[in-house]
Image (tube, rainbow, N blue to C red; front, side, top):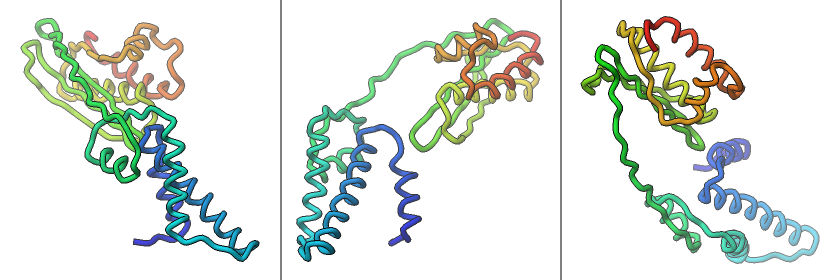
Length: 215
């Protein structure tokens, strides 16, 4: 489907953000396209000469390949990434994420544990929380999506969701578990030097915390 010019640019701006090698390839192709199309326009207007469209396309592809050939490209392995780099004829090393083994620390008897997490990508973000009793049985859980801000903000959103959920279920004795050193340091500093983007959500957490018998 062909879009008008403004919608084409808006689509590119929305889908070409981030700093992954896949995004870098798209940005380079975008820039090379305009560079060579404009150069072809100038040839026709000022020199009354022209190149075949196939040659212009080949010049665009060659430019992108040359720019990326000087870099060591490592990118997460996926069918989409493999197909993209294969079509462009660009060598890349595809990496697999190694599993991380961890254990769950149970709370004291009569206390529940709120475990939370946040996630962030180029185009989306999310958070979640799960509450378990001292036997490890899940009591309730919550998850949400939001506009990407920062991983710290989304980790804190997970804590807010967990605390709100605990109050909704009349759970007054809680522990909070997180794998984020930044979030732990925020709690330890207790309001000092909180990242400005996280100040609002941190204040909400502080207000919620005051409603528990033990936290």
